[in-house]
Image (tube, rainbow, N blue to C red; front, side, top):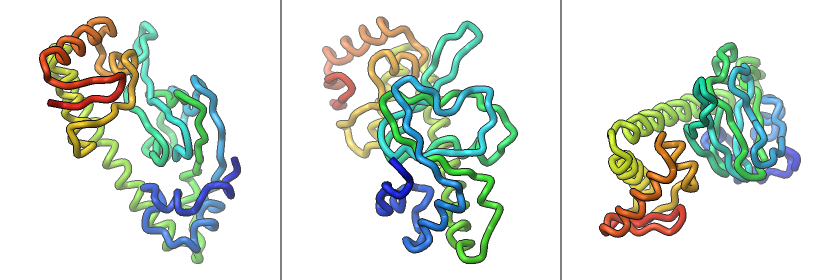
Length: 222
């Protein structure tokens, strides 16, 4: 896929380009040195320790943000899907090494944009650049809220408490008591920082108690 193959309507609905005039989109993409890259499952998009000047928009597929401890244990920090933006905070700073890696969990097409070009304005698109700057600030603020939610999810001491807190957070985000989570069982265990077998036992117990119904990654709170 090339940049030209992406539907303008898709990009204009992403948080980065929301509010941008359609006639400015092509020029803005050129200005930001837009490029599309394809990644296979397990392939690293951004690597911990590197410095990034690009941020990405998921055109198709799914990605995880992963961290690791001194023993090499992997922890899933977040999940992003089609239309989501990632890496904007590190790209804006430019000189700060990434603390986490961004990894494709399925075949994914990613639009990469060079944040350094935002300050190199040209008068014919400066209005569009201003909108993108405001949108990136909003996106970074949303990520801070997501981080706060993750801290809240991890606060309970028990696996049961962590799971219930996480499911209520997902329910609030979905605006419904029925929703999908972006993780399989192992990934959810990594995200919550718990043992997979113990988590599976808790899920089974809560389901039998009538707290929720579950089928794979689909939950319905009762």
